Amino acid sequence: MVQTLIIFAIAILVLSPTFTHSADNSTFSCQDGTSQSCCSQLAHRVSSEHNSRCASIVLTNKSGYNMDSTNKNLEDGRWLISTDYFGANSVNITCEPHSFLDNESETISSVTSHALGGLKGYVSFKINDSRTSEFTISWKVPTIGPPQYEFNFLNDLSNQYYIVNNNKTFEDTVYQITINKINKINENKTPISFIVAIVLLAIGLVVIGIFFIASRFARPPIRVIPGPPADYTREQHIRPGPPAER
Image 1 (cartoon, rainbow, N blue to C red):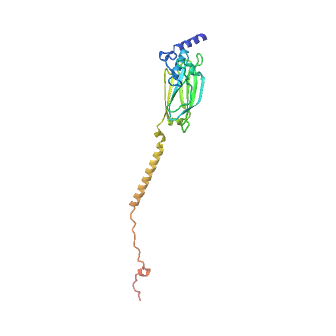
Image 2: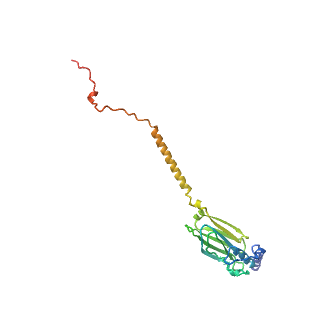
Image 3: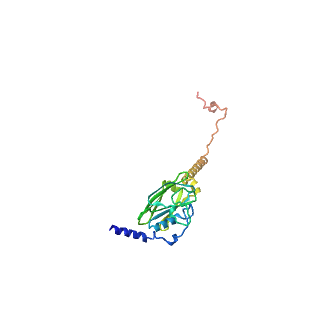
């Protein structure tokens, strides 16, 4: 029974379109030191020739800052290396994660390391901005079944400064990620809530000023009664009464 299941699993792997070696991948040339144009195709070819699995991460940096590779780990599988390439020219291919500059793209590729094996790993990068934003890319490719990929910032606040676009291609063996910096004008703009508070405060002060001025003009004028002359005495003000009777 166990032997039958093993034969059945091998048959599925061989017949699966993910592992079938296509004519489009049979001829391609890798340049020395490159990864984007080579690693994903080479990984697909290696997995096809060995009836195994592969996974490639194409990371495009448009963050406005350089990126440093901080951590990498393959729990299952191995990194693609130069000896996997059998082209006419001898080249040094870098398919492992490494630091790279702004406006550059790099490809990270891994393949299974044993028969009927899968893939599981992750890489971490740090963006050299003032917040030291960090993110992790993880992938899991079972022996049978579709690959799974995941991207996460370690701090959710990073989502306010970067837009991440991702999609899968090449029979889901390639996971493309582009990290875009949000417009600098929007980033440096004063928060809208603060502007609204300032405007409301200004309007309140204007209204108070208008009411104060209006109340001053609407008050009736004070009637001033002229006082007595300076040489006025109380005796002068007393009128003589009638003569006394005798």
